[in-house]
Image (cartoon, rainbow, N blue to C red; front, side, top):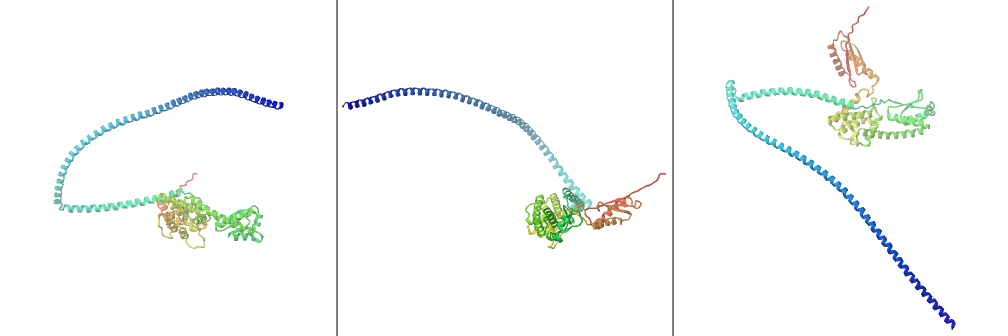
Amino acid sequence: MDLGMDLIYVILLVAFIVVAMFYLGWISNSKLGKKSIASAEERAKRILADAEKEANNTKREKLLEVKDEWLKRKQEFDAEANQKKQKIQNYEKQLAIREENIDKKYELIIKKEKDTKQLEKELSIQKQALDSKSCELDKLVTEQNIRLERTAGLTSEDAKKMLMENMINKAKTDAAILIKEVRDQAKLESKKEAQKIVIQAIQRTAVDHSVETTVSVVQIQNEEMKGRIIGREGRNIRAFEAATGVDVIVDDTPEAVILSAFDQFRREVARIALERLIGDGRIHPARIEEIVEKVRVELEEAVLHEGESTFIQLGLHGAHQEIIKHVGRMKYRSSYGQNLLQHSIEVAYLTGIMAAELGLDTNLAKRAGLLHDIGKTIDRSIEGPHALLGYDLAKKYKEHPIVVNAIGSHHEDIEMEHPIAALVQAADAISGARPGARREPLESYVKRLENLENLAKSFEGVAKTYAIQAGREVRVVVEQDKVDDVFADRLSNDIAQKIQEEMEYPGQIKVTVIREVRKISYAR
């Protein structure tokens, strides 16, 4: 019983202690909360005060910035306003000056109107006086005509008819004389103009001509290489000649092999192929065929590139691929020693310049000049004149009809249909005939010089003749006792005329007649 009571007391004591502790804890927590709330309020007040202070500072700063911006804008506006004001004042001054000028002009116009009215009055008076005088003159003329009819025994109609016939005959005579003068003048002017155009075209065109030969020389390092080129029993040289179509000459010439062929393309293929074989060192029939074929393909590509470059150089475009190839092949063709491509380019420039002088289409003219000898690049197995072969080729690949006609007619195989064809023919002659353009065989060259000297020597009074400057000039020495100065002048013209009639020659030949008088005496 006592134990149970003790237990109850213990429980009650524990409960009391717990309650007492809870109460004490609550009281302490309440005090602490109040203190924290008070401190938080104070912190909040400080933050609000600081924020308000910062806001006031920011406000003052912004107000200052706005004020500065306003002042700046005001200054800009004032400056702009002053500038506009100045412009307006300038305009006002100009308007005032114009008004002043207008007033002066108005006064002048009024004055001129008054003067005009005064002149009209004076003219009216003069017209009346003239009309009265005209009536008097008509009467006098009528009376005079009547007197003339009586005196001459002719009516006015007969006299008029006779006068008209006389005037018509005189007018016909004057017209015929005038027509002759105009025709002579036109001939003279046209000749001068034509010469001027041709000279300008020649002077503005300067194309170099490489004189091609029939051989090419390939340098070798030593004499041993000649034996390797020939090969065992000559098999290498035979294989090379069969593959290229070129004759290989291996003689005593030191460190050189000569390639001979009329076809420049084949000779070029052979030259490049032989140089590559020498550089490679492997020379046998199979290798020779391989290198030759490879070089031939490369040169065909180079031919196409050469044709394209030529068209670009002349500012032409729109040509068919085959036409371009044929133009490239001109590089490996020659005519009388004149490189065909350079000759064709020169003809193109000459034709274009002359066409420009005459107001014709320069592009068509240059195209016709470039392609005029394209027939010379066609395979030799096809027969016919090169002008007609080129005509057919250009027509096949749809060149312009004017160009086609110029190609076919530049040697008069067909009729010319356009002035450009005549220009191509003239340019072709100029390019071929100018000094140094074409190579002349030695025999014909010497014969031409002999004929020139003999022709000049056939005239009476000629003592000696000398052909100089490659036949471009002949000097004639006359006997001074048989030929006087007047006859010497006529002799030079006669010799020039006979040369022109009887000889064929490129360009022109100058005839110089020399009459020399020598007086000799001796002092002893």
